[in-house]
Structures are given as C-alpha cells and as structure tokens.
Image 1 (cartoon, one colour):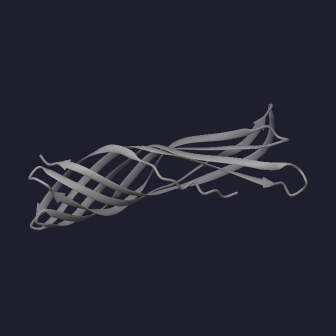
Image 2 (cartoon, one colour; image 1 turned 30 degrees about the vertical axis):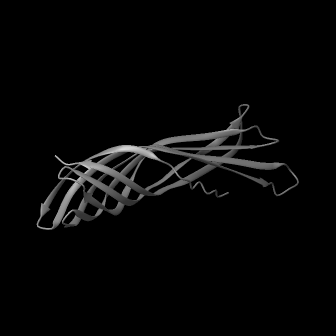
Image 3 (cartoon, rainbow, N blue to C red; image 1 turned 60 degrees about the vertical axis):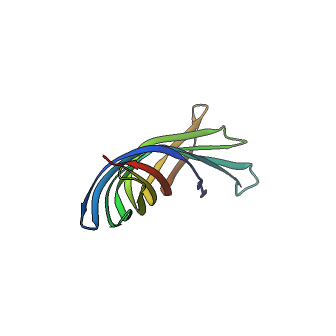
Length: 181
C-alpha cells in the first residue's frame, strides 16, 4: 500500500563558510545546520479480499534537523555572485507505521535514524555592502531511504508481519543574509 507523504515545511538555521576569489572566479566550502519542521502522515483504508473487515494503515515521517557540508564554485559579476554547490547532506528522520482493523488490535512500528546523502544546487549572492550580502539558493537533497518493520503483536500474539520504507528527498529554497569578515 503506497502512500504519498509530500508536504511543505519551514526551518531556521545558520551557516559558516570560506570563499577564495581568483579573478572573477570564486571557490569555497560551506557548512550549514537547519532546524526542520517537517511532519507529515497519511492514512489508507482497504477492504480485505474476503468479506472480512477493512485494514487501516497510517504512516508518518518527520525530520528534526538537516545539515550539509558542500563545496561552492561560481563567477563574480561585480556585486553579484552566481554559483553551483554540492556535497554531503545529513538529517534526523523518524518513520512510523500503525496497522489496525476491527478484528486485530492496533499495533505499530517506529524507527529514528540519522540518514546521510547528497545535496546539489545553485544560487545567487548579491553584495549589499562590503560586509553584507543577500543570498538565494535552490537545492535538491536526497537522504536515501529509511526502513522499519517486523512482526506486530497485539495482546502478546503476533498478528502480522509488516515492513515499510520511506524515500527521503526534498527540494529546498533558501534565503539568507551573510556577514563577511
């Protein structure tokens, strides 16, 4: 039973980085950490093949934080930097599933894990003053998948074997204000 757990979220975070300019070319490295407020669940109900009662499955995915460590290369046009970025991404992901029907008592599984994947994207940074710049960035982040499952028991008796997997990929739009030392 596939379910779509797409959704929108917001976060707030910070970054540190170092850039070096070579003529009009810029190369650097950035690390960031963002509190993520993504929490989505979906419920599906299907009828058993016989005339027995229906089955209900609720799945939920949440993410507490997201971080990246990325390289950055770009071209500087006076006060405007256009750049591409890519590297490592990581985040804490929680994945839960609850199964139940009118015959079997409700049972569930939950998994929490730090997943590691990749981030790739690009952006523009505009120098407002010598020490301040405004940045806009689009990134695709893929943390792979998280799995959980096994035998579910209710009342001390194994009722069903249930296994699931959630793919964790996200597209992120960011804005930021940077201070240059």
